[in-house]
Length: 239
Image (spheres, rainbow, N blue to C red):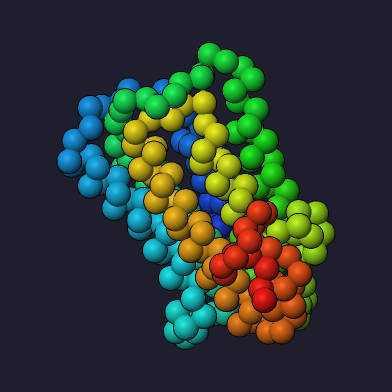
């Protein structure tokens, strides 16, 4: 079987990830589109769009779902498949989103107001890099498979922010959601749904990593909290 189609697929997912991230940066940062008056239809459409991302994202990461899908998708390509589906889900949200007001705050004319949002994106990209960007986008297992190499074991990234908390990627994403220069009523809906999803997704990620890594990850949970200043619950240190 020719490797050319798979090579194109791998490069496509990486390009799709970069393009989608760039569009999401503009979308979440406070766009210039006019705000419509709120309506039942707008609320309903935006709620469905906000929910579908979290549901799809978490469902595709479940080990049981992955086992079933890899019966038809080669295992090393599953990361690329997941990345592509995530990009499709995000772009659907952006394309069909209905912006409506009123504006909760608007600091587009204050240059310093952009700094928290930009800093949140920098923290997100650094956290992705430390945790293994190639695993996040599916490139590392895909490239190893394409070259016939054995996939190197994925280690716990106990450096940078991962020394202080288990979920710096999710925390950075939360900061992105709540630091735009323009926050309108429709974005409050989006941010609320995605904030709930982020905490649920953090718990599911803990359980997923414990499933794959076993006691190594449980020991890490006992030493490092999921989020700072969380004294109890599944996102605190494991007792």
